Image 1 (cartoon, rainbow, N blue to C red):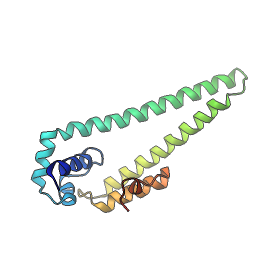
Image 2: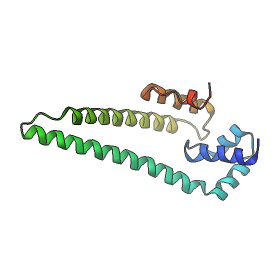
Image 3: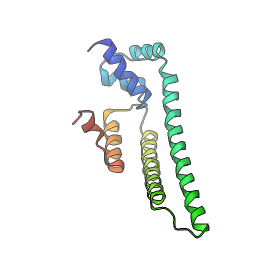
Image 4: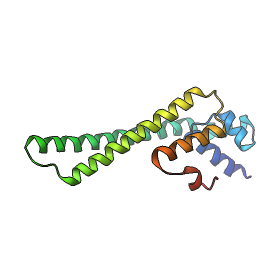
Length: 146
């Protein structure tokens, strides 16, 4: 496999899937030193921090929207109005999505904390299975990995 393809795959595993250098090297069949060099050259640590911050911002935004919808429903109820069905539906969907996201985050965090420092393919498959269970989306099928 070409170096650029390996490097791109390694970056994805490190930045978005939070794999260790050792696990990436084992997965891709290259040296740990190569992966560390790619990480240094590509500034992967900063990219990982940015990616994690972006995920947190999205969660915060969704939470803010749900709070705005809840306030609107509360205001309508206090004014003795029947809340708009559209607002109720939107709030219900947002609240459900937040609960699912929180459950998924907890499961992944628990799994990550109970693993040793090696992030093997089994852990990745477990995370994908949990994602499918919580969200109903098969990540392995989408990526062509069966």
